[in-house]
Amino acid sequence: MPASRTALFVAFNPITTALLVSLLYREKISFKKLLGIFVAVLGALTVISNGHLLTVIQDISQTFGRGELSMLCAVLSWAIYTVVGRKALLGLSSLASTTYAAIWGLLLLLMVWFFNPNVQVLPELNWQVGAAIGYLAVFGTVIPFIWYYQGIKTIGAARTSVFTNFVPLFGVLLGALILNEQISSSMLLGGALVITGVVLTNRR
Image 1 (tube, rainbow, N blue to C red):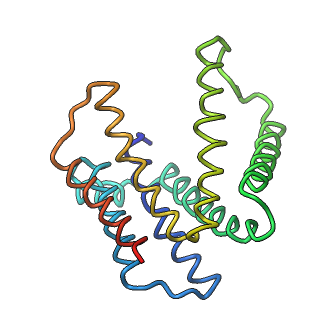
Image 2 (cartoon, rainbow, N blue to C red):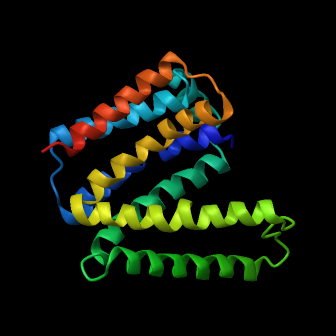
């Protein structure tokens, strides 16, 4: 699937997480929080679809395949990870929880490789690939995951997950700053909706 199509599914993480929290912990989600989550997701989808949300959703419904099914599983997996993390944080620090999660992830990846030994795990290694892996490991995984767990510990799983809607917004902004990509009016509108939704969800 194209990256933009994949990102549409990622935007549903907060809704899935909130529903799981409500289902597993019998927590009532206030109307204000639900409204905030909905507005933030709508903003993220507006940014990702470049203002053509209905067209993209219709296209996905007509051509739903293996990639879309994989992304639904990914969203559910991330929501479970977030909710389970809340439970784990009762007896572990954010650093310890992230460490255990990384170890389990490594074991699962090794299992996949063991049963598919012919799969090419890495491209030809050079300094650029090494630098990319190093950046992804430190600044794209370890530090953000620790901060994410600290957020869950402080404000709860549902309210923390709504912040993931900033991902497409920051992606667009960095694309404009680094790659000189154009920012459209729909992106500005989507960004405003994301910020409004996050404020609504987390305002006491």
